[in-house]
Length: 304
Image (cartoon, rainbow, N blue to C red; front, side, top):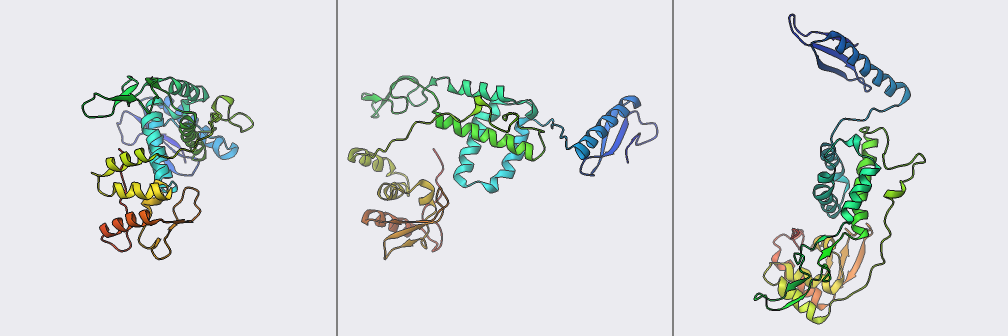
């Protein structure tokens, strides 16, 4: 049932009642004109009919920051802790400030403009645009900045930009599935990604190991922080990733056969890691500091 009415006798404003495409009864306050209220009601009923009979979805007026809150709540249970940390960091630091307007107003041109802006080199935050950093407290000795390589400016790598566009593309796909948008603005008529938004070519990685001097400096820097030196020692001697070490418990370590069973890996496949004497000693130190028998050996470390 749909109607235009006044809730109370003598009230100035008109209201409308109608059922949406899901059959839920809706009520809205329109204004003092009955003609305008009738036109609004007719328009809403037309949208409902197109949705029910033709499958046409009206784009929501929700803003991108508000949709980001909904997206965050719904995808949180589906993401691993490290992925949540990375994706939500991209969302809060880059995407929300760059796209403050309505969700339905975002198009491929906006995404391409965002990528162009992100590619623009900016002052290196590590050396403050100087190209060199001090290696001692007296600031008398300087060396080339390891982040900008002495160039004084930095720009995000192709892999970094690909991760950021992955988050934005995922949000647009979810907006369509959740019926906030009628179509994905980043896809062409054939369902393919538009040319300007395809993944950038990433350079092949390199294999590099720390030398003995770098290892000594790393362990010395970890010394004042509880658990961190043992954590770094395990990583240096096993090659395990951060989250793999954080997932270790007493039960996951076979002290007799000198192995660690990893269940929370990057690709989701469990594997065994062999432990040398140094790694076993570091893990024993962590186990001694852990009160519970079944708890994790290393507490969750917050990023600096």
